[in-house]
Length: 494
Image: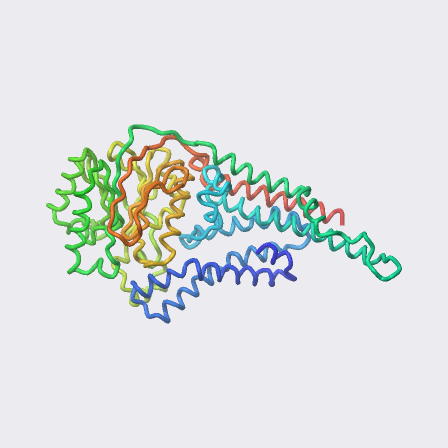
């Protein structure tokens, strides 16, 4: 992408290249939007396709804007792609993560999670810092290639001006192998090496420490098909599925997925909840249940409620999914309700600064589904929390790439916070992620299963927990100022 921008003849051409790249990226990467709208939301296929295309076109405006900005006149090539372009890319992704409630999916940094040396920047600068390091890598490679090929082209032109009397080029024409030392010895190569070595070094740091006794956890995956989940004739079968899985789980901490029980909490039979609570107490712990909650005033919430040894506690989802859980700009977009068969579209928002739930001897920071895409919201419950828990229902997206993408997002949250993250999902991927971002245990997708594992709580704060995105944004600002200073010097010397 950066190489294409380097060869663009105008700002409009660079913007068009960025838009084409972004449109292709998002059309492939979030094609599951169509699945949720058409296959499970009952939206007519042409309308669902049009909405998906328009959504991807909107997201493509962000790389288009970066391409336009990267063609600012007067900026020397090394500063343009070694400093300005990586900073602009990160800023575009950061903006995409909060504008119109935000859609941070497919951030560039996720491509490095969890195994790349660049993933070492996650506990320091968050996923946006990993994006910055990845974009800087691409930019520095473009700088190196451009510098080497420019010198080769210059040497070739000089050689063509000197002949040996027979019309042949003299020995001054550079050999292709001369590119290697030009690249290796260029200052940008040392900067590139430093970026990767620093990432590798940061990956060796243990930012947090184990605390308390180990706890055994069971994560339940009911594998209830989305098209059957809310049917009245299937509700008892769903309740029985989770009752059976819970009975077979001997762990002090048992976790059910998002809206595992397809009823309002008040509608769930009292004896059913009592049985689950008694089982949790027998295990010496608690059970967390994903269930919608309806309050006397009529508000309802996407909630996780605990039952068992500890007093009952509730987490209520705060960052809701547009159109799936609430309708933004209802006077303008309310018509969408009429073409979507999505239950419970008017959830209320829970508190923005919740407290961790104290269960099974741990302080658990719960988040629900889409919320774990927002790293700066996850850290609101830290450093108090010792474990992270994400409950999700990704069945809305069928057998698409969405579940794998969501798992990788959860891996980034574990890395950023230095905490074990427990994922309980309806259809997958259910599993345990260590504080290094690696998957410790998981269940096959689209199977009824329980993942049981002994885990440890963690205490302490990574730099990202302390600073959030501020550090990565500050670094971006430094790069932009440096690029501006170089541009100013270049203009004065011209």
